[in-house]
Amino acid sequence: MDLMMADLKALEAYVSYFYYQSKKWSKPLPEAYDAEEVADYFSHRPHVVALRLLEVFSSFASAAIRIRMAGLKKSLRPGSSKDIDENLSQYNFGMVLKETMLSLGPTFIKVGQSLSTRPDIIGPEISKALSELHDQIPPFPRPLAMKIIEEELDSPIGSFFSYISEEPVAAASFGQVYRGCTLNGSDVAVKVQRPNLRHVVVRDVYILRLGLGLLQKIAKRKSDPRLYADELGKGLVGELDYTLEAANASQFLDAHSHFSFMQVPKVFQHLTRKRALTMEWMAGESSTDLLSITKSSSIKHGSKYLERQKVDAKRRLLDLVNKGVEASLTQLLETGILHADPHPGNLRYTASGRIGFLDFGLLCRMEKKHQFAMLASIVHIVNGDWSSLLQALTEMDVVRPGTNIRRVTMDLEDALGEVELKDGIPDIKFSRVLGKIWSVALKYHFRMPPYYTLVLRSLASLEGLAVAADPSFKTFEAAYPFVVRKLLTENSAETRKILHSVVV
Image (tube, rainbow, N blue to C red; front, side, top):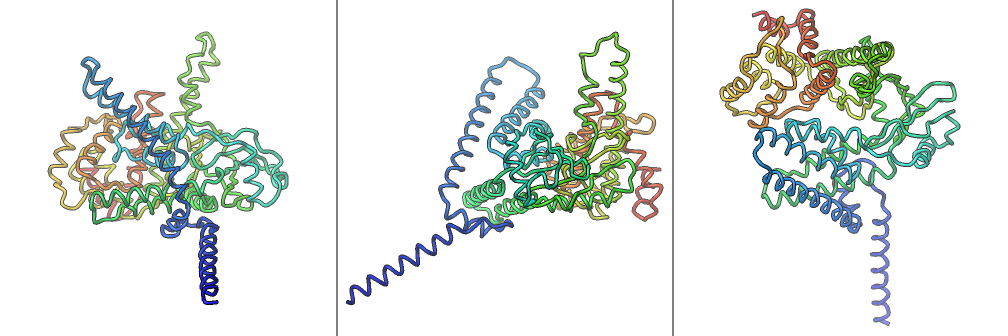
């Protein structure tokens, strides 16, 4: 009898154990990113993590072999310019990295897109290669997209839309966009999230966290690098909630609606859920379309109409760029609310001659003191006053404490020298100034805040578009009137101080 009772107790313990484990195995993935809950979830699914680790490792190992082979080929090639070779090597490395991230899916594509906006960290050539990730995302099948919309709205498509396009008009890392029409006749853009995306993103962030934890042990670092993975996880999981993007779009619209040259689409709140977002359709030409018309070689010399089309496309492109420069400075110096993904694919030139904005997954917000410091830094770049520029950067917490300011100033002077003025405006390409500042920033480990890199990256990409159509375009020439107007119209101690430096 004692043995039987002991066996029954053992059986009860086994049943309780398996019941507890089954509860853990059936526990869903947490809605919000929490490092402990995510670790608990994947610790019971080691096969999922192991398979993904194998995929990631093999992809990066293949990339490393390709980069190594390219390096060997370059070393065997007879003499060529060292600078050109270095830039080409960096660009090729960026292209291999881009292809690797494309193959690894949405999370890695998103990380690559974020890195492409940080030339201060990865260098301008790698940044240029990774920026192509914005345009080369393959779409997922339409039936899946329609199923997700119906699940989110809890009704058939026909209950809300009279038409949705057969093919997506755009595909991004986390979703794709269809053109549609509501039952009351409104033209809309319907953004649909990729299937099973939350699981994919959280799994990849968990693997990154494991890798950073291992790195911490190997390097014996006191600071915990896993916190970077946690911040990334919170940001990416936040982007998966399209109701937050809808709130961002509404906030951006409220802040900029009184600027007549800017257009922001309104959100259809009743047709927006976590995985489906419906916004007003933004009719307009993309910068890529305008540039392709401008550079088109298929136009026959004898056709005056087609030649006029080409000239008009160039005019519209330059107007888009000028308005883009003004919009960047408006966000930076007026509202303090910045579009956090300012690549040209998110801009449109409307029929009314306004600049339209798309994609509000992330916004960047600035403090007033940083707005004044940024205004001062633009003025100091124009004046070639590098010591004052470093003072402004220090006020923005860009320059690390203990940095040798005099040595940094001398490096900037050596890199850029005396800036030549033409009609009071620096006769120099903005991208060249930016490249030199990036190189100094990398050397002295500057801490570039998000708004600083976003605005500079935005202005540099706009200049690149304009120069392709008109080699004589100067960003400073487009930006400086706005800066001077700001100095003359805002009566504050900070602007008076900056205006004094301009006049002197």
